[in-house]
Amino acid sequence: MEPRDILYVNFSEGVDTALSNKLLPEWVVHEADGLQSLQRLINDKCCQVGIIRFGPGCEELCTPELQNIIFTNPCVNWVAVLQKSALDDAEIQNLVTRFFYDYHHLPVDTARLRMTLGHAYGQVQLAKQLLSGDRALNEKLGIEEGLVGSSTSILKLRRMIKKISRVDTPVLITGESGTGKELAANLIHKFSRRAAGPFVAVNCAALPASLVQAELFGHEKGSFTGAHKQRIGRIEAANNGTIFLDEIGDLPPDMQITLLRFLEEHTIERVGGHGSIPVDVRVIAATNVDLQGAIEENTFREDLYYRLKVLCLHMPSLNERGQDVEMLANYFIDKFCDSHSRQIKRLSYTAIQTMYSYHWPGNVRELMNAIRSALVMSDGPLILPADLGLERRAMCRSIRTLEESRGMAEKAAILNAFEHAGSNITMAAEYLSISRGTLYRLMEKHAITWPER
Image 1 (cartoon, rainbow, N blue to C red):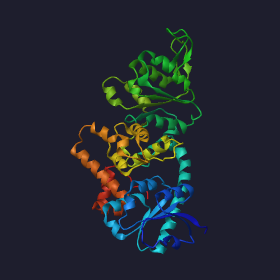
Image 2 (cartoon, helix red, strand yellow; image 1 turned 30 degrees about the horizontal axis):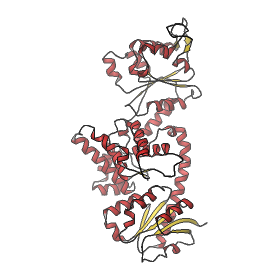
Image 3 (cartoon, rainbow, N blue to C red; image 1 turned 120 degrees about the vertical axis):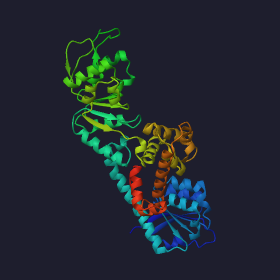
Image 4 (cartoon, helix red, strand yellow; image 1 turned 90 degrees about the horizontal axis):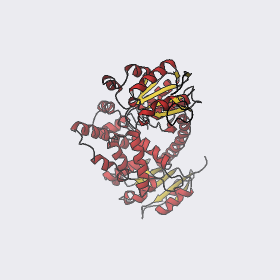
């Protein structure tokens, strides 16, 4: 076996420092004499495992400087070596759980430590292989375009998108504002037989009422004042492709009749024209309002509703997606971070907890904007709750009911238990002082998926 590189820093003055010699010949040890030296070694050496040896009080572990180094180098699996008595401190327990792959007590059991280091190294290698395979899978599923997440609702959504893309019928996408309805429509188009054709998106709410027909169906030269030349409409421009009609509930009643005729006959007539033009277009519509209620209020045609709703796709709100919040946040950090900046931004532990307790009325769009703002406002490598601006927004919201507060507290406690238990369901139940069966019921109640190990 070829020697592998490992980082080693010793903060334990007066204690035997020969630990590094005991790791040979399996490892090439790069020893740092302080935090600056450690950061230089991280930058210069391609190490995937590191050991940090602490003194009796683990004072260095509580410093933001060391936490920043560990947090901003996620490709290194860190192992802590410390006095057993140090773990009597709840803060040290939390920090070790949060920042380290594993820990060992002094005096060191060298054989056990070698096994841990081998596992830590193998874990990084396996993660790299999975990441390489995931990139191909992500590209196929459209995750690279933003459909990020591993929650039950998102996994179900991906399966439905793949099924819907195989057929060529109208689709109605429902969901709150900011959940990614246009993204889903784009993915349906991308995986369909029409992928080589155009994808044309139209926001029906943004079209002036007097110009809706000309925008959608086009017009002939001289058909009205200002029509100096012929112009094809959005639907005709999407020929052999897909037209996405967002905010379909805001379409004027007279245009609903014209759209219904197009869906039935697959032909259009330009404004000022005298002949029908056949158009081969798949229609995907989206709405964030209750169309059934609009039908009862006579603001939306029932026959058009059922023409559009041949297939229905519901976009889950961010509150329904559990741990996807953190995954999405990290995705946006990687997406929007300045590629020329040497400082890598990462979410602090408190920022993650704040995001989980926030309601997200604007869903994924609000989360994306919060991350973009935080990347600008944060001064250091860690993004703090104040950088996200969520505390200020939460103060502007109405007071929660007792039931809502209790549910949020239960969900936060379960997620925290999983984090401390390393996704071990039995250990998480023990942390919460409940049975496994009760934990399963609470996970189902709060739509929490079993986190991956």
